[in-house]
Image (tube, rainbow, N blue to C red):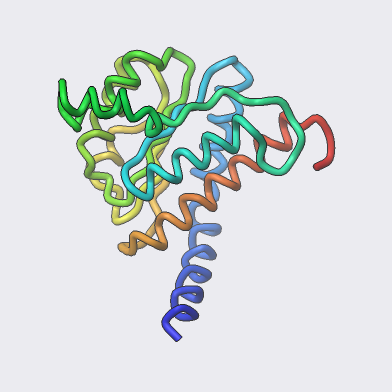
Length: 190
């Protein structure tokens, strides 16, 4: 029975997000589209399950989502274990994403930060590094958004304290943005 309770909770929260977050989600979609049209890259990062979401969404842009189209410039900063472990060992774990932003991100790029708490120091430092590099930032957050909410250009905050519901909706929002981008860059019907 708990499973069905979770599904109802997710459904109710999704309806709230569709009503209350439509504007920031559309704004994030516009930022993605503009970035890609102007030749910029999308960068994604997060920790734990949010790292998996970051990787999943980067793959949707590089490979495809629903429609046939060429590859789009995207990179998950969560996938290079040599870079991550070297940065964690030689600098600090708090610098694993910021160091990559400093090395790889350029003005005109867009950094997505995935976090359910908004309190991860490595994401806050990545946002700071992005600002220094004149890279725009979007954060997918929950639980009030934490400190990260004020460090980004656009915060999309799921109104929940439940990590699982937040991650499920972060991925749904990411897919909604991918759908918009797919339609725009599509080579034809799917």
